[in-house]
Image (tube, rainbow, N blue to C red):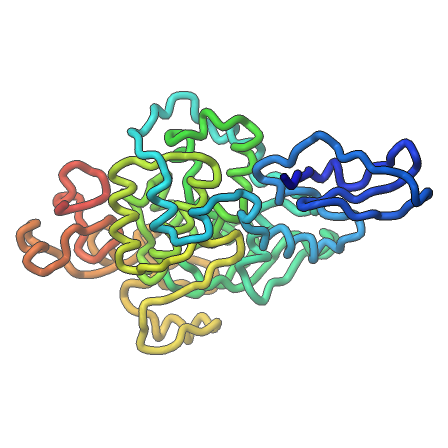
Length: 365
């Protein structure tokens, strides 16, 4: 049986003076003072999130950030993980939502901690991963991102990010599985350190449109989905991967919503912690990095931006009813069903709270 070791076990000296390197999968000599010396492995096993080991001191800050941001969940073994998101979904327990009692952000550790010890906090690690054309603040070892371009997965728009007191919120880092949702689906029991890792795991983090992130709040797949329908398969697959990695469960409504999405993208693979492949609903022209050009080609369902400032209804996602981003509306659920639109999720064209009688984010169920 192969034993695995944490970062604290990487280089140790035996009594005979041999320096050994212990790594997942075996031992490799670093250097040896005596060829006859025998190394004794440490008894400390790696944690389930062993990919969070500290970067080598000789690693450059940028390399360390790129490495940290691209680490996957491969160290969390599972036969389901090698298959599809739909297969992994079937391995998740289905339970009712636990009480939110006791939940605070602090239960998941310091916000945006430097968990991989690469000298840069998690927020900036993710900005480095998900934005292009970035600039950084001098004197921060290329850590603090001051500007860049985000191809937003949630809205399908291009956002020009500029760091500042009034502009930074245009791009926020979303917990794909919201921390409050995680707390109510098993995170109360996984321990403080695992919760800290969950809150800072690149698998569970995406740079996204600020208003869309605010609209999502702590919703799960049954109550909120990205308005960019072309990204929904990747989005729910990532939620499944996170819940599997941290031994969380799903509610029946959540599982039904995820199954419904995945049924339209059979073969959807389980994602890794790398930046997602962003897909857009077809548009009349290619979205460009130029704000003026992009605004001329975006459909009415897109949030219009000038630079990194939002114009239009903050957090609404568009001009349609209740943030649906469309002028489509239905007199009642019978009309929605006749049009083949039911069920209608919050954010979809035609969604309205008057059609969502139980307030669960899904109208005309």
